[in-house]
Image 1 (tube, helix red, strand yellow):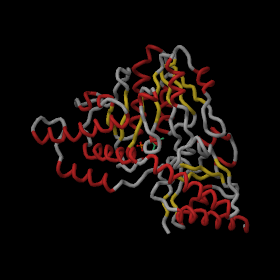
Image 2 (cartoon, rainbow, N blue to C red):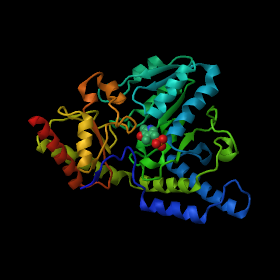
Image 3 (cartoon, rainbow, N blue to C red):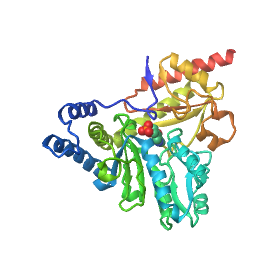
Image 4 (cartoon, rainbow, N blue to C red):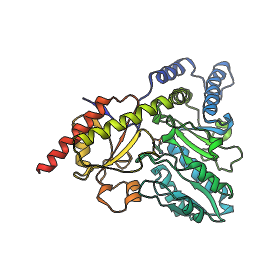
Amino acid sequence: MKVYADFAATTNVAPDVVSVITSVLSDHYGNASSIHSIGRDGRSVLDQARSKIAKHLNATPREIIFTSGATESNNLAIKGVAYQNQHKGMHLITSSIEHHSVLHVFHQLEKEGFEVTYLSVDDKGFISLDELRNALREDTILVSVMFGNNEVGSLQPIEEIAEVVSNHQAIFHTDGVQTIGHLPIDVKALKVDLFTVTAHKFYGPKGVGLLYIKDKTPIQFQQLGGSQETKRRAGTENIAYIAGMSKAMEIASDNIEQSNIQLTHLKQIFINALQNLDIPFELNGDMNLTLPHIINLYFPFSDVEKMLTILDMNGVCVSSGSACTAGSIEPSHVLTAMYGDHPRTKQSIRFSFSHQNTEEEVIYIAEQIKKIYEMNRKE
Ligand SMILES: *Cc1c(COP(=O)(O)O)cnc(C)c1O
């Protein structure tokens, strides 16, 4: 049996999304910047996708900038705000559990002379609003805190964070990648200034994403060249993938409730199966305030390399935290932020499910873990 349970790393592309992409690739190939009819046709597909996406997020079309994915969106948000606002202050705030496409940008900015405060998290993976309040200074220009964590699933109180930041000059960015398809996203209600999205985490293609930039947010655009994206992100737009992302977002938004019910059920079946098989495990994170598709478990009997290898040999595709740290013996920075120097930072696995997974599949995963547990007991 082959079981894919690594949907937080990437998803397959939904068949309806593939249809949209192939039709645009072959039938609407115009360059959106060309003024002739074929170009205008491409432009029209691009404009429609932008309008639909904006509507799903409750943004205006002008507030959506298409990018090559979340890594670019996060780089643009953080560097763009830092460089554009450095005359107002050089202090930045983020959390210690961000994706590397956020953390590594802050590390770079520190080398360039900015000062960064990394907010801590508790053992469930939540930041503290009090710590944020205390960290905010007169010279703080940016706060970047992710919405749903990709390793443990913890959901930060984005509206409350926005409320705290709203009395302040700082601009608020959130990496919302993992929330699309699981939470209804209304950027106006969330009161964020910048919101990062990437298509391949919700059954769209890889290499396309967007940054929501609230109107009038002071930001320095990073990609120079032609006048695409109203001169804010140069480069010929990937219209086929953008249209695919729009379709994927439509499907994701329409199915949030149903998919979350199914995911919560699958998670419960998985936990029940582990318990019924007498496998020792502990949850990393919180069972309630969490993304429904992610569950991160500590197995106090095997190191993660060995487990992932055996699971893979038995057809189970899962990972240890972020894909970026998988394959290396580095403990997860997220688990380290939650638990310090504890064996569980090296003995934990992230399972991330989809509505496509079945009960039979999650029980199969539990059975393979049981085999590993038995093997380790005999050693
Ligand atoms: C996957 C992921 C990213 C990176 O997205 P890319 O489109 O692959 O660059 C960023 N942040 C989070 C939370 C993610 O899960």
